[in-house]
Length: 75
Image (cartoon, rainbow, N blue to C red):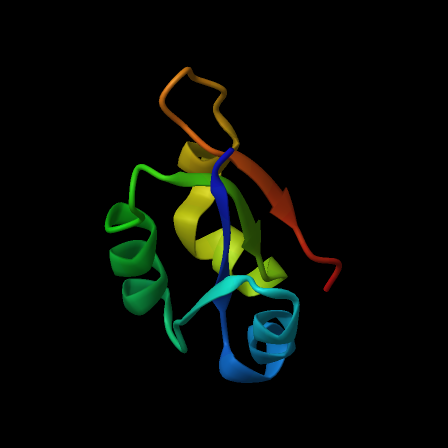
């Protein structure tokens, strides 16, 4: 079973750490893209803030055997 990661602004994702989620704070689009590209292969689910989803773009939503399941938090 994979781990869960969250990417987004501190105010959007920090609370998820209390549930055991690996939180990757990214305050701007470039930081979001860097965080996305450096996700470990053990991540099975990525939670994106609405703003982070825009920064990652369609890449996050394309299905694939090596891609984690991705969900977007409501904005």
